[in-house]
Image: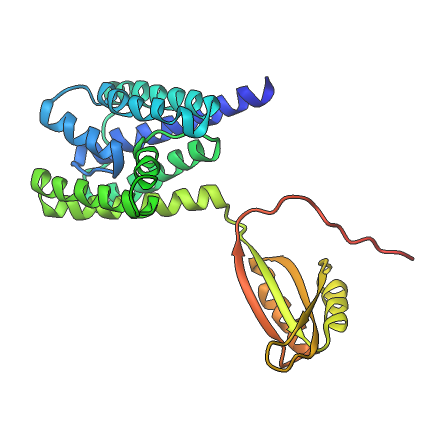
Length: 279
């Protein structure tokens, strides 16, 4: 019950932030987002119909479509998020005035706040836009990736925005979408990005011990063999925060200046492997 309540709190917060962005920055300046939200904004502009109701009407069919793909929990969370978004859009538009009419400020802060709201919802296993659900369905029938389909849909949406609001507004809309996309990534992946490090060296055990002693990080030794020389080597594997990467390089090169280092981004690490010091 505690987890359910906490999830509802985050979904509500995400929906509120997204609605605040729409009504305080984007809608008053005719700047749109991609996906179903963007289509809803243009439909509301043309028909003068309530944006909150349009958001619910256009999104709910795609959420129902997701039942077989993602299960009941996702659909319930998405349904709640969409309804909350619709209610907050109407509430904010009635009681608050737009923050700014400067297009650059509206694009930047609107995109950032929208991305924050959408990211919070996605991180809690729900969504407020049916575009990705549609893209997943289409990708199973046609030889295109989900990302390619979403990009095609959004290009079409921004072209329509250019005809409807003018090409300058379409370019600001594209900027808003890029900013929102980046913020969503930051929310989902986190700011403290970890690095996965593989080090191939002739001094594997010596290097591993140096990393343990100087950086207080655990390592894993993996037996390896050179593809050309066929010589046996030890690959040292460790995970380290991005901010400590330079310190790690200094330790590596102090032991072996010819070490081969491969660095990869990782966004989530589960489990804990603590150092056990014996005296």
